[in-house]
Image (cartoon, rainbow, N blue to C red; front, side, top):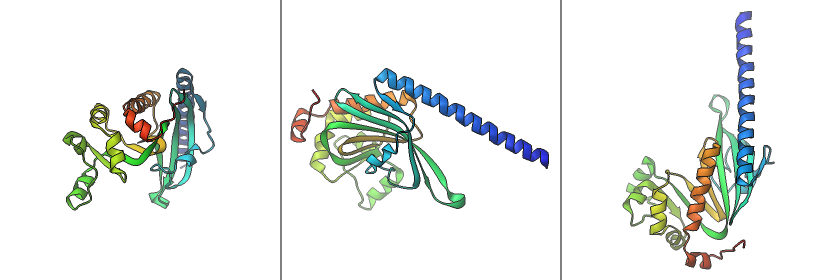
Length: 222
């Protein structure tokens, strides 16, 4: 019996040590990435997630905590990229969720809109009248579920060339509100995934038509 307790304690200590080493390596990798991108890095960013509770799932659960923030401006876009954790359920059903959050603050007011990969539930819901916004591209409409109260604003942004661009990218959930675009994923972003996601957003912003920029009050940083 004593030996079993010693083994359990030893395994627990090893898990703690392994977790500490992995956390340190992640901090070092993110600091290196921040330096390469010209961004600032903070391991403890003082609940930066509170600024973005309009985006799912940053307003649900308890014990919400953000860490490992990359922040700064590159060109026309200001970035906040961070790790986020929260808990749901209780007792045996309690679960900790780890989420990667990338927010791009852009110089244009965007409609409240969500573009996410379409699920089987969405397809079933559509058969009973709960449909999303559809587009001329059947491939895009099959791949993504799009919701937006401002249909004109949606179609202005998701024009044919933008659709072609989005179809070249990995299936990704996009959220838009005010001057912010958020890409939120299950699991933290790796350094490589951060660079890829930033490039995706930059490509999106570059493809916003000039007339939309004028109509929506584009404010150039230059």
